[in-house]
Image 1 (cartoon, rainbow over the protein chains, first blue to last red):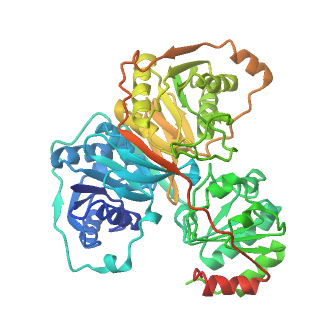
Image 2 (cartoon, one colour):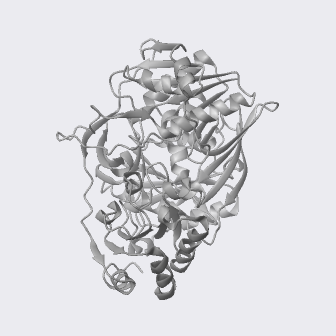
Image 3 (cartoon, chains in turn blue, purple):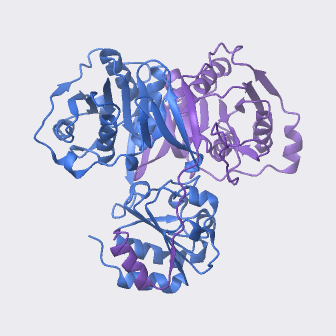
Length: 329
Length: 251
């Protein structure tokens, strides 16, 4: 068995989710060789390749596609690159992390290879059998891929944690090979152009990947009051979330919405204030490790899923928490 | 320009789903079905583009059992001009749906294909990317803003990516998949619901479109996720901080 991992890099190193994808590749089979594919241009790409080569002990080689076409990770050239590399080397599996990078690229590449991909895998039961959540995690579906090589999947990085031990064993550095792009090209390249990237407030972690999420619901009563949630989040180094009710009431923009049709989160700590616990909301938080709920209604459904509940007035509880919680590191 | 919108009939987002006792799937008998919320956003966007004078026609497409016609009628009541139903009784995976869409696009020749970024039943998040790949069209996935430039025959798309927004410019024809922030879909009014009843819906089968829909995936089982155990109710903030620190070790 041989696996190709599509890795995303930024600022000269490959990102943590891609390392999780490498960890997942390692669990596909004991004697699988793992190639990591990076694309980009210039010195930061080569730097990222050096980092990739020593980021995980199970990597056999790093493939680097260096071209101006790949300066930004556009789906059109990337999918064709995956097709090219797959046709040359005949991998049994192709994996990416299920972030916006992998979700954008891997299904397109799968279509070019005439393969049904399996997205958002949370467990690998056999080399071609996977568990993935459906209905926003309200059911788990085990699927088997029965088609021809390669078997293609994206993995949810929170389900494949990288132990600090394996990430540190940098002694073993795998070889770096440049991908021959002389025959690269195609119809769809150039039809999409990168314009710009706007980062959201950089001081706050991204909702979907945050270690701690603090969410406010309708109980906050106003946009003004919602600032209390932001204050608490700042103290905890947490991302801010909101329920659909809070978004619909105009307290916050809807990119903060957590739930079935919003963002699915799986932080270590999820704190919900003034959240009743509608099923669509619970569907988006069920994989959180620890859930804390503060609500003045003792019968609110959120208490049925919360590890720690506090029945009380959030307008008293939040300031007290802000005062007493230790500063985040 | 013609816009094609692919819409899916799914279990209504407000229904609490039940896993079947024999573990073959999720109960869909006698369950309220609706249009996938992301597909509603796709229809809405198509209608707004048409209302802005940038498109001449909105064609809604749905695939699956006979009841998909109801979903198409909902789209027609929102304002789509006509519908296409690809009737299939066996489950269709995204690769098959993408191939069927490609076949329809070769007939209809739309300038833009809009889809929801994912369906809330299988949560695959694949079809748009796959059909774009098959057609060699550029793709703008997870769109939160779409601006069409008629003169340049291009579309600027803001995409919701991890930690921010990415802006791309795509040549038309293109595929766009919608994210939650793109718009607020309208409700169909009663007169429009009545009008929708007489709008045409054309039927196809996969065979007629020359698409092999034999799956390369099989569902082994569908199970309930592990239940969260009931937690404890605490009496004070101090107790909460203590538990988070010393029991859960999360702060």
